Length: 633
Image (cartoon, rainbow, N blue to C red; front, side, top):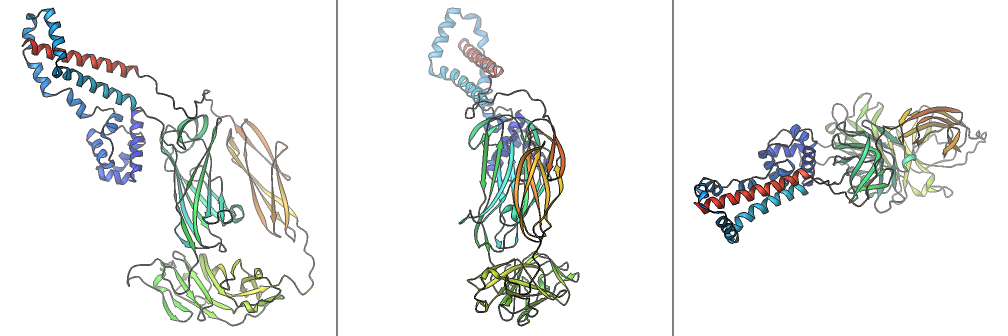
């Protein structure tokens, strides 16, 4: 127990001053792995010499760490073996022992005790022994904050790009925390209601991954991968007892993460693609963790520092901003043509962000640092953006409001590993009066069918620009497309739905563990329609979800089911069926949870109390013996 108490306190002190294990180990002069084992309670506390170096590096209380390590501080030990005591022991007190009567000894004892000097010699050791005993008594561990969350927000970047972030959940105390769910939210600080991304129920297992579509999050796709550095993070049964939101709690007998095997942590590495139509400004990430036990439910919330989403400006920008003229830059060959060979590696990776403007300044292509672009399998060395004039091959109801811009990277097919941003300025005076600006979009020309294909676009009426994300180079323009089709067409078939791909994972769970049930719903009809997916468990309706699917589209619908009673459960969605099994949890003795705000006092340590009493008696006899020897000398 002392080993775990010392390691937990050492880890807490290290985190308070912001040192990593490797930094502290280097400063103290010990092995990084050895320090990690001490903190996790695998190895016993180190030698006094190492403890003193740790005290200096952590600016900690020397007596506290020595006491937790089971050692008596040197200054206290010195009191019990001082030079004067040794001299007194060597004096001739024993020679006069027989010449002193009992009555004389009793009188002399009282006389010398009344003497301030002799009284101080008796009282000081006794007081010191009592102080040592009290410090040992009250040094027993009390619950510490069991949960710490660290969020590393994505760096500031342009809107519409993919942003990377990390979330680390640390159970720093060796306690069981019954985590029910970990949830992520990304929001705009000035308008968190309108611009919010919600990704709930992040995976709770090492190696788990989960992807959320734009429809599921409400604001851009999110992907999450979970990883844990050791086997301590897991689903255990036991009694959790820790400080949660500033109050000491016993969570009773429950299932949770982190247990007496050591401290535990899990790290989420995530990517979020921000919607291109969202406004620029300040954003934040928020993590909420719900812990549920048979007696209570608590929620822990942590919000990250802010980051900024912005829109790229015109011109040629060497990304990554370096200092001085040694940083390579793209070269403008002529208006609308740029040589990027100096900022593209042999594998096609852009080492800086680059913006290419057309010669007339009405079109702009932004390629972010880290993007990989290839043309016919080779790296891109030159990009041109040419005004090809008014678009041709327009369809019925199409009106051109911008010129055609042909983007080329050397004659072949240029492909990027993730989308780059294209912005084209349109002429608002060319928009037909009956067209709302919502009808405007960037269109890509498809030479295979000689048609213009609409791209997912955002319109900025203040700057008269339309923006989209593209992955390959071609001809692009801005069109106002009417919803009216001149030639009569056959009415599309009504919406029709099919349900397939029923999956139940995992097929076997423990009591109160979630089971994810998913199906694929497809609209095989010719028009958009709504469909309600009904989930039945053991023939009884358990949940339902309504969704709207475009013609020819499909969506994955997932239900999360939790059952407490052990047994086999049948699953039915539409005409599909499956099953899952709930097994009984390990039997644990019933535990009566203590009051949520009262931390139970530690049990009486009779061995320590007996030791204190014995120490007082021994010191008293020693003082009396020294006094008596001096008296008869």
